[in-house]
Image 1 (cartoon, rainbow, N blue to C red):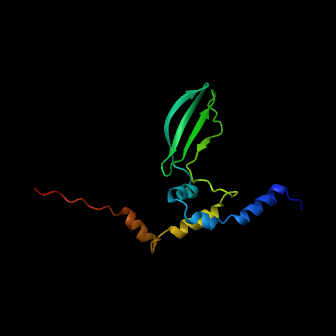
Image 2: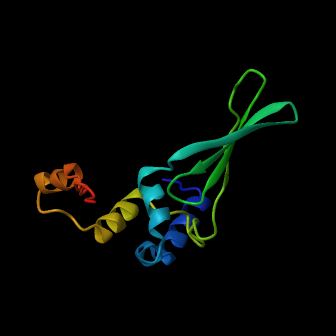
Image 3: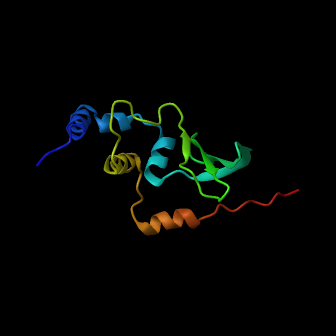
Length: 131
């Protein structure tokens, strides 16, 4: 089987890149977005060069993105402005399994589903002020 040279070069690069080590100190806010995807909120809209642009910000991390819509409201490829440290230097990327492994490593799991749900549904009661 013939393999394109870029595939073998990518495999060699992946061998040298230690995903576990890179993820060990990776900021939690970035890890959450890598695991779940960004939580986009529109910041606002502006017109430029005859097209409508929408600026987005992520609620979890400092990533921003920009959509550009044509006059027919077709969305052109989204552009991203990543914060420093978001991308892994010297790698072809980190696969989802590495991300999930790191999320699990950092997690503090409950002893049961019921325990987790109890924590989510228990709302602290406010005490009434007495005069």
